[in-house]
Amino acid sequence: MTVSLVTTTEAAFLLNISTGRLRALLNQDRVVGAFKVKRLWMIPVNHRGMPEIKPGRRGPEGTWNKFKRKAKTVVHVLRKTIDYNRDNGTVYPAVAVKVGDKKDYCHALKISGPCQIVYQPHQPNKSQAGGARLWIEVEPEHIVERVYFSDGDYGPPPEVTEQRQKLKKKYPKKKKSKIQRKSK
Image 1: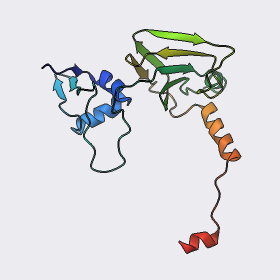
Image 2: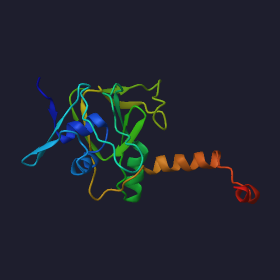
Image 3: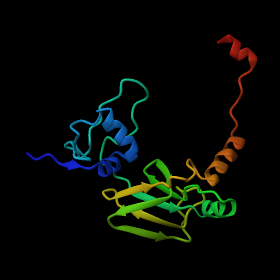
């Protein structure tokens, strides 16, 4: 029986985590059966085709994928962020990458394998903030590597931050009265 091995980029893609987070797990010796060949990590995959991660001793449970991904990767170019960056001289990530329920923002992408550009002017994609009409779809088995600028701004783009603030104003959290706090 042969053991399938993958590199850090492929393993990070399978687990849906960044390569940096995977390297941290490798340095903590939490990836089962991983070994180094010169400067390259080789990571075995289990019978489900996924790398196995040992649970940590403290903190919350890991959020990486335990099973092979079934959802397509959907890539959106954030036009409002591009306009904001141009007008304000900032470098916020203008690419949104959505896999299932997880959304990540980056500056560039490397897609290894076929992908499809979808334009639906009359049926916008409601899973994206403003209802995107143009996006890229990548099948689940193909790697989409996120690239970040070293001097870029990180975190969600301004349009996402503005949306979150509007939601907070629309649905404010109820404050506890002094009586409720004292009774606890």
